[in-house]
Length: 423
Ligand code: GLN
Image (cartoon, rainbow, N blue to C red):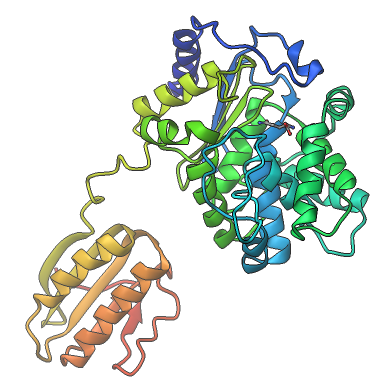
């Protein structure tokens, strides 16, 4: 059989193809010449499988979609505290090219508007780097997110530089407030080259999947940035990524995202999917008209809205059985699936129903999928408490999903590959 996803994506494009409203960006002359009929979409799973439909291999300039990635690199290179002292995380409520500085500190309000993004570009890499080395750091970093080397569209770069006076004035502004100390003209040069990197909708999907996969590119296996950096970047994308359409976006799509004036949109939903969409005509906020529609439908059809998970996850305690080993009774609690806070809390409730005493208890995690750190600590604390209640505890863990199960001051559990129950 063939997976139905590519057919679904083709049908999705068709259903959104009717809307010909919007105009390509005009303030960058080269972008105004874009072919308005181009329309593509791609989705990438966190394991790197990419599905696509339409013009998903057509290159276009990444523009503002580069901003969250340059922000990620700045956080990785200089640390979160330092970058936060330079650029805030509040939505500005203004258009992307506004002077939006926080009163008092003079920080740009967030890294997704131009003034914040020019600043973050200037703060990537090592402070000792010259502008050329800094741009190469950014290009290498974005290429690592995409899993292939990205090239600059020189025509778009030249075209934007010929009309970049507003960005130049923004850069002088941040230097006048002491936020950057490098040359503002060089900062705009590097930032504009960063915006002129060529990507396809498929590239955007992979870049999104790298964020969705906690910073590891699923195609190359390379860890591009730390998980803590990804959390910061996705949070800022969620609140500031779609400019002053952010509220509309969060309610109707509910996926951290970023748009660019060449018509690209990138989405990333942690653990689930990276999305790339491309269609040049833009709405009044500077977001791709058909790109927004595709993302709205995709989110609705596939239940991807961040706030849409209402079930609390599948049952974690598969069963509790009273069994015997060599004739001796043992209570076996079998867990299954992912174990995060919610699932661990339910499991601990089941543990708490076991009467204190010296009867043996086995916790069987052989059918579990993933423990996050909280899930692991909670289950180990449950094991510790069962031990303190007097139970000899056996941990059945053939795949080592709970490595190093030391339980502090309590009696240590016996770890076994399998339990030889009497039949
Ligand atoms: N390079 C563009 C600019 O600085 C990026 C803007 C965007 O994509 N919204 O204006």
